[in-house]
Amino acid sequence: MGKIKFDYSNAKDFIRDHEIDMIEKQVSDAKEYLLSRKGPGNDFLGWIDLPVDYDKEEFVRIKKAADKIKSDSDVLVVIGIGGSYLGSRAVIEGLSNNFNNKLDKEVRKAPEVYFAGHNISGTYVKQLIDVIGDRDFSVNVISKSGTTTEPGIAFRIFKKLLKDKYGKEEANKRIYATTDKARGALKTLATDEGYETFVVPDDVGGRFTVLTAVGLLPIAAAGIDIDEFVKGFQDGREMFLNAPFKENPAMLYAAIRNILMRRGKGMEILANYEPNLHFISEWWKQLYGESEGKDGKGIFPASVDFSTDLHSLGQFIQDGSSNHFETVLNVEEPELDIVLEAEENDLDGLNYLAGKSMNFVNQNAMKGTILAHVDGGVPNLRFDIPKMDAYHLAQLFYTFESACGMSGYLNCVNPFDQPGVEAYKKNMFALLGKPGFEDRREDLLKRL
Ligand SMILES: O=P(O)(O)OC[C@H]1O[C@H](O)[C@H](O)[C@@H](O)[C@@H]1O
Image (cartoon, protein in one colour):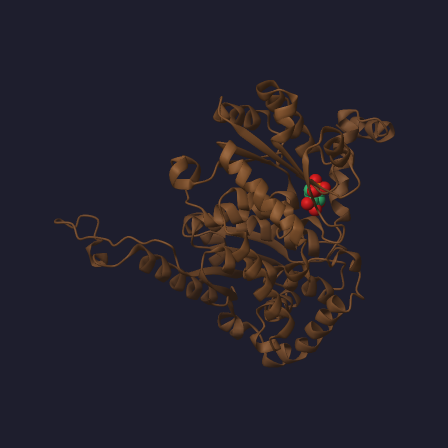
C-alpha cells in the first residue's frame, strides 16, 4: 500500500531556502506543543491518538448497526451539520460511484444515503421526503452538542415520519443517535426513547471526528471498509509522528503554507480534478476555516473543482489579484478510465486524442494548469494520492488534521475552538423569538 506524498517543487520559486530552514524549528516546536499537550485548546487533542486509541467495543457495535441498516433500509438519512456532517459525506461521496444513489441496490449493496440537517431549506426537506417515498428508511442523527438548530429541526421532521410509518417502538429502533456521552438534549431524548447511541468523545472537536462514530457509522452503512479507514489513519499518524521534517507531509505542508501566508498569500485554493473529491474540499474548508480563522488572522480556505471551474474561476486564479496559492489533490490512479476513439471526419479536431484515455487528458490538463498558474504568480502545492480508497483517504485526513494543529500554533491561535460561530446563532435565535434573547431582538429589529 502506498503513501500519500506532498510536493512543493512548484512553490520553490516563491520561497527562499532559508525560509524553509528557519521555519523547520518552528514547525517542530508546534508539533511538540501538540504532542506534549501544552498548547491552547489542549483539551481537544483526542484526535492525535484516536487511530490507535479508539473505542474497540463501540467499533464492533458500529459495524453491527451498519449491517442492520443495510439489511432493513433502502434509505439512510444522515442528519448533522459542520463536523457532524462533512467527514462522512466527504468519504461516502469520495469513495462511491458518482451516481451512487441511482444504482440498483444489489449493485450498491448498501442503502441510498442522503444528508439532512445541514441547511434550513423547507424545499430540500420536502423533496427528500418525496425521494424516500414509501420505502424503508433509518435515521442517524449526529450532534456533539445535541442542541444545534439545523439538525434539531430536521430530526423533528424525520423522527415524526418514522413514527407515523412504523409506530413508536419500531421507529425508535431505526434511529441511531451519535452525541455526547452524557450531556445535551439529544442524549436525554436518546436515553428516554431507547435509541441506540454512539459517542462523540469529549476531547475530539467536531471537525476532527471523522474517525469517531460521527463518521464511521454512516461510512460503514454506505458499504465502505472502515477497517481500511482505521489502518490509513494509523499509518497517517505514524508518518506524522516519525517521519523526518523533509519527508513528513503534514510538517512540510504546515511549513510551506505558513511561509506563503507570511509573504501575503492569504488565501489557499484546494483544487481537485475528480468530481467526487468535491466534499473532501468542503470538509477541509471547515477544518482549516474554523481552526485558523480567528483573532484577525488566518488563511482563507477556498476550493475549486477542475477542470469545471477552469472555465469560471480559472481566469481569476491565473490573472486576478495575486493573494492566493493553490493546493492540488492529485489522484495518481483513478478508479476507471475510458479510451477515446477516432471519428471518420474529424470535425471537432479531437482525433489527435484517439487512443489516449480520459485520465491521460485529465492528467495533462492538471500539469498544464499547474505550470500556467505558477507562471501567473500562483505558488502550487500538491498532494499525490496513490488511489482513492478508504486507506489512502484516511492518510490524507490525518495529514490534514495534524498539519492544521501545527499550522494554527505556528500562527499563534488556538486551533481547537470556534468562538466566532456563535455570533450568527445569537442573532438568529433573537429574530426567531427564542426565550432569553429578548434584548438582542429589540436591538436587531431596529436595524432591520
Ligand atoms: O455536532 P454539533 O454540536 O451539532 O455541531 C455542529 C457544528 O456546529 C457548529 O456551529 C460549529 O461551528 C461546528 O464546529 C460544529 O461542527
